[in-house]
Image (cartoon, rainbow, N blue to C red; front, side):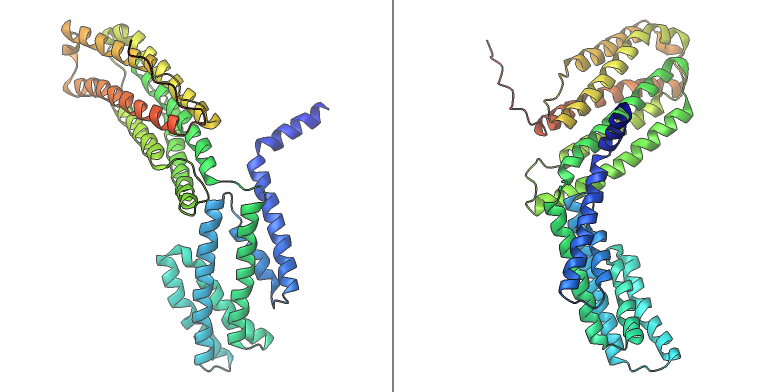
Length: 370
């Protein structure tokens, strides 16, 4: 019983991937059945196309279907025109025709990768008639029909069978990114007193960069769904821009905290720096949880209090002259740190607003002025 529960838990942790595998299986099955019923010449291409266009989200499936159909139609028109208009009868002529068919289309696909299918289609339209002694024009038409059946099948399956919206995936991707930013901030601010684990920091920063690329890609898919009226959620732009600014804050804080503070400043600022680190990291993680669950944003006043306490202690340190021992570069980093924390506080205020926009909870009632 325990083994079954663990296996179920592991599978459930990959429920999105399981749903995608199920959609792909259904798409391949239906595409083959339709291709056979329509007596298409090569049902294989319908099946392969249905698998290609069935993606993790509806938005990604829309883009894959559009790109594959455009590439196929373009490649079929060009390859069919080459095969029909230029006579060829021997292997040398076919090889020369192949170069003429591939080179221009491959160049266009290199400029616009969304048209990659055009090169493959042009080759198929040119070569298949030589193998089956079919008409080149008929081969081009068959290719378009096969791909059309597969693309429409994959797209319909993406809409109907366990559909996954990119708009919902933005929540999870943004939440993971906020947690990575929280971990990076904790590591950076800890370096002010105990030095920095550069290997750990590089791993965190690299992870943030990769997660940001993923989030931007999913955000584009979500906006594609919104444009097609397949999603009615909030605009992803403010959320993505706010997280990008928080990433920039972490980068600036990293530059400002490249070396530990002098011992006397460490003693004075240890507590406020720890409070800022813990409070902001907690707020980022709580915001990530709120995004995942569609909950209201966490209260931001603890962040206000921690940043103000840090600023007040810095003012006291300056009034006592403890910063005079800093080198020019050290002083620049020290004051840049305070500025960065203030900037991060402002961006966290924007995060509070966008998390509220993504919340499924009703808006809070306005506070009384009495």
